[in-house]
Image (cartoon, rainbow, N blue to C red; front, side, top):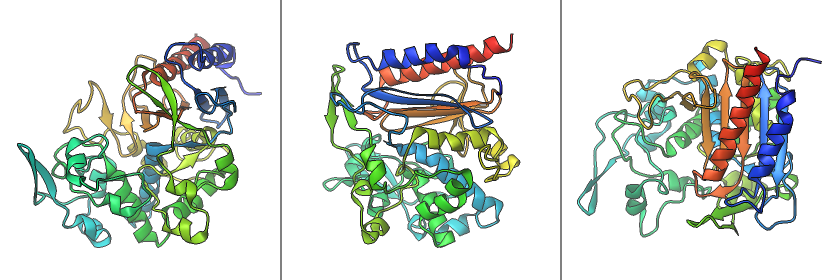
Length: 396
């Protein structure tokens, strides 16, 4: 059996997850699934702690299903890179974007003047590179007050499952700054229009099937719904409570007509088991080749590019010593993660990282709102510290 540098750390990893999910602890996490993989595809650690929701008797399981929200963005980026490799897409061809997404041809930029919002013509065209790197200029209504205010009295609901909620103005001129928002939903639409497939069908045929992945859909089947983790909220005092799921349409779609009508959000619509998502991460660790099926989904030079900082014109745009690639954020951490590692997250506090230099990747999955839950982030940081501590010891 291959050497597992994490074997001696497994008790500490389990204890760390259990402590975070201890209901008697202050600011605990109701339940979480944590998975760590290496480039051989092994789940060197896969563990579930706590319950599927606060006050719920059902235990969390490694088979529990999560709405992975913006973790979807990595999959959409991979799809776009595949089409770039085949010559169907170009990162910097504005005419291609304008041809297939006419909605972006005339999109305007929202400007605030005092208490009023007005629209002005954009000063440059949108490219696929801008969309993938979050420099196209789109925002999210739940993060950006201008988008929120502009959409009223009706408002925008980016997880509605309706493409109409993507028809928003820009909050910055294309290419001028990093703004987090619906940027990645438009590349998903571009994939659909280039291939004449739904985004979910494209993912299944060109990413999931080649990697031996079964259940990562936009519209979960009944078996997945039965294993769905509950959605929770934490108030300003730290108190947890159950809440209704916010990504409802994909969960409610049952008939072929309902499924077809559901917008496949490339920015945040997928549901998944953590272990299945980590098959994508181990494939990136293995330079684009699945360690499970030996199928290649990306060329190595593409994977290299996927892990390369793409917006050096915006140094330290959100935090010192961080960058953004066309697949996620590139940044080291005090936990031991290398500078060339990639990571991103999902709105209900899911976090993944992929460290090719160290040959390790992982995911922490919960369903808690709002984003940035401190107990979950502590769980994630502690998990990484134990993982990288074990790696360091194994190399002494």
